[in-house]
Length: 137
Image (tube, rainbow, N blue to C red; front, side):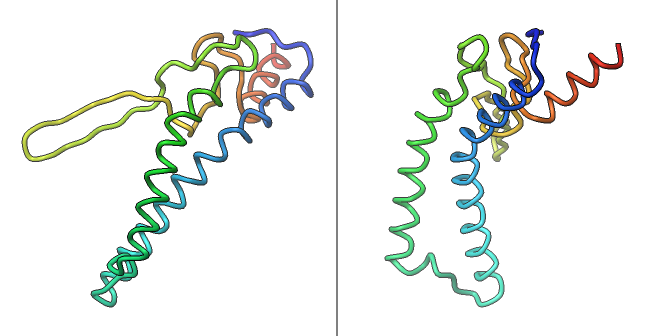
């Protein structure tokens, strides 16, 4: 594990790292909210706003551009501030259809508590845990 001398500096770095990962989180949550609202409206009224061409086109452009941005942004933004290495694949995805089960790994913008390379804490929760563990020893 990466040795850290100053808790305040480690907390600052962790908060800064988590701020960088906020952009993809907002994108994925907004896509889920829009899709959820359209689904809920479809269930209640049997019609949704995405059936109108202009809303569907805007949502599709937002989704495609945002996804391309996230594909480029997430690996760059998730570079460890301590060892300056790219994160290994820490995201997991399962897909089931009629014929097969698929498992894949990727870099996730969610739940990055520790660097996959040097094990340095990358979230305020991980910094608190690490320093409480050091204080207990």
